[in-house]
Length: 481
Image (tube, rainbow, N blue to C red; front, side, top):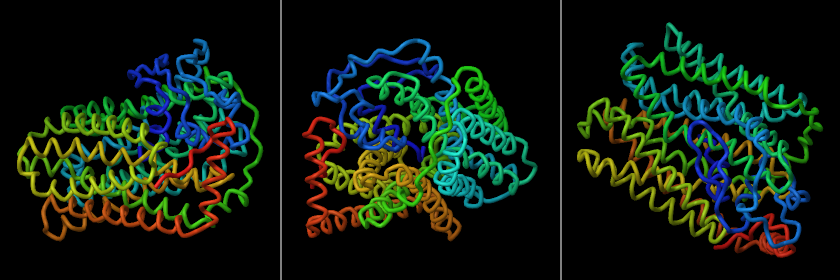
């Protein structure tokens, strides 16, 4: 994830339960209506606001409860290959953090140099998400998903077999190119496989693979890498990609080629300073998380005194924090978006600063890891929603670029964290980097809100968005300060 942005807004804000690794669809039990956060997340799939009501079955203005959503077994089966692919992508993105010491040792490079494997992957997502999303409109969606899975498999096989660090880095970049586009196109495919009133559940099921990857796939991959060998981890992930590819070929029905992307129209969103500010908040805020987590393995083994095997369980703890943060962000992003950002970014900065001090204590270090995951991922729904709210009428490319922005933050933080370690400040120094990045994101959030209050046009747009919600589609919630 990096791609956790859309996941949190849909999976946890919609009332759909987190599913087990098998990715079978779970029927929701929430009686609350579909919220604007879920709708704006759906806009990232390419649906504009004019069809949002039919997309969620909210044309009456009362909202569709997820307790009413029931969709056939056939659609669940057709979506499951994308769920498997999402599980593999989420695993390969995050598992590298727990394996940096082993990889660095095998290639005879330093930990900061090995951290380039995180940076390279993140930059690949930054470049691949918008470029391949636009390219994906030129071919059928099923074929594009197959091509993306093939690219993912190739990259992981290259990583597993790479005889040199340079080739390993190349494999990481190749695999990353498929990341952003797979989730964007896959969510559209999932939505088209079910009836209009049941699309959110289908999208949530597809993204469940990514959510489960952070709780199950990453710790398991770390365990395999530390006991059998890190190359085996990437080989297993490649096998998951093959299963997903074959499943897409066999189970996903053929779909017509979508209409060409209106690139000029999509680019107009970037003329809005608020869109750019929101993306800058994404880069800095999520970068704060990755400054610490990228080097979590050497920090916990060399400073806190944990064994190598304990890193697996610490990553499980981080995954639990992610889940709780997603739940928090999904619940409150609609009610008070900007105050939520102030609280989470400020809290993240404080916890990361304290992490530097408490990293020497096993218990306090574990608590800090949980809080970093929770506070960091609580920023995901409001940041993604902020971009979509501000990118009026042209959310598709802006959403893809914001997914890239999460990964740009990952790359920046991993690079800066490596610099301070290489400079001799120790394995806890990246926590200070993360605290500074989170504090900078908080400053941008305050600036963004101040600009919006001083701009009459922004206030008018916000009021218009609120009127649209009152009209019955619940497409966008007004931004609260």
